[in-house]
Image (cartoon, rainbow, N blue to C red):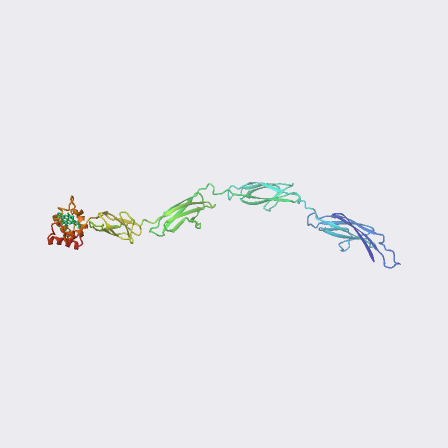
Length: 443
Ligand code: HEC
């Protein structure tokens, strides 16, 4: 039966030492003395850590004392004569040494990764940017510099590292510059190279040859546009899709905006107006009037009836430049001169020659009555006397007061006129005939 007594000393982060007291003896009291009694196998060692973090090139070189003829194993593996164990990653390893008498000791060694040299380093990359001179040119540059450490090399967009921070021949775009110091510690910065606006100072002019529709409302108008001031133009109309051709056809009358876009997307525009042909060209609208004369001594009842021809569709009519109306008849007109204008559906107009509305002539029955009054009444009913307010030398006074004339001169109501007695029946009959016929100036 073996007895083990283990005492661990941790001497540093790279070296642990376990001193093992090992004693074995045979079971019986009469057996041979235990060769390990009083023997202490002690293992010291040198630990070489991996050269990189996560690397597996670490090693432990052990050295045992407390006997001779040592062999070694690691982590309970097979014994070997060499005390050197290589190819080790970071970790804890137990080395056992066994001497020629079989007495053993163990010691645990800790292999650790190297410390990260970059944790305390901050590398700042700065740069001077020169933009390319045109959108297409690759003549921009970034002159980068780094601070925070030493021994820098530089890489652009993850490419190979180079000794200088000068990167030339660059087009517009975004770039990432990485600086790496002698320990492999890195810092990065992003730079953007912008091309100058190709449209600045550029004037694109759009001109066009216009063809108006040949009929009113027709859609056979066209715009043939061309642009100057740049190259590689495409065209659109009224904000539509751009097309290679500047020809836009099938257009109705209206206002159109044509834009031209050059190879760099710079835009110029022009506004163009297509107009319908004048629908009145070649159209002559005539207006002929039928005139009805005015009857004097009454509210105006003259009338003009217009008839238009030569235009399109139905007409509206205006009297003396007034509001157009649907009716071609203007009534309640007094004597005077009137012009009628007719307008067709295309707003083409024509105007009549002046329509003269005259007073209608005196009628024969009125003339007879007038003669009766001149002969029998005017001696009293005249400009200077106007008996009873009546002056029969004014024609319209006769017309307006015809009922009173009949009452006095025919019916003697309330008393006869002339006061000296009623006129002969034949004369009175003239008054009756006129009034029965209507009693107007024209009767
Ligand atoms: C000699 C003068 C004299 C003659 C002629 C005369 N009148 Fe008169 N007339 C008068 C006088 C005066 C009055 C006003 C008194 C009255 O109304 O009786 C009058 C009044 C009237 C009136 C207004 C009164 C009413 O009833 O409305 C009428 C109408 C009228 N005469 C008609 C005639 C007619 C028509 C004649 C001719 C056929 C005529 N007179 C001839 C003297 C005359």
